[in-house]
Image (cartoon, rainbow, N blue to C red):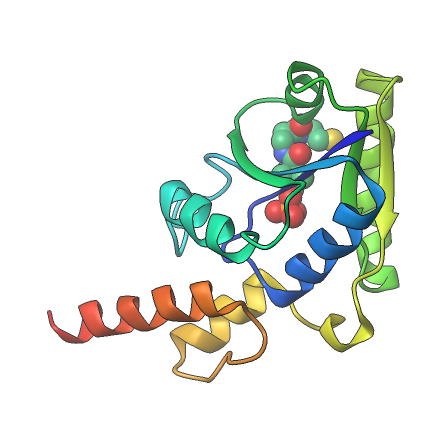
Length: 162
Ligand code: PNS
């Protein structure tokens, strides 16, 4: 069974990576799919995100990285995948995830959404908080993969050089 793990991944966090590791143990193939045009002012461009995620998932043989635009279920069909993988951290994620899963089921009844829980040590980690802490000068070490830390530091250096 092939699954698509969609998201903005701006940036990829260790919570995402934990979910990818779990998903790769369940599915024959897992495609991490970055939504294009998800935000007007993203921290990282889509090509930078592709690169960072590619580096972070190098050790997983059954995982690949792609980008998509438009409806997620159309991308799932295009990829000839059968499932969408999503993570739930806390009950607060549930309502939004349920809405999306049911809408996607209405649009493509043959596609199942599979929810997995990342390790509880990442239950408070979100890309939004990572961006906020990073932009205010706080450390995000241990919360995002080394490939992301590297890019964030390069980002700071390039801003300071201006
Ligand atoms: O982790 P995120 O950033 O909340 O991911 C949201 C994502 C990419 C899964 C969602 O916005 C999406 O699937 N967008 C594609 C457009 C689409 O299919 N919309 C209808 C979903 S019900």
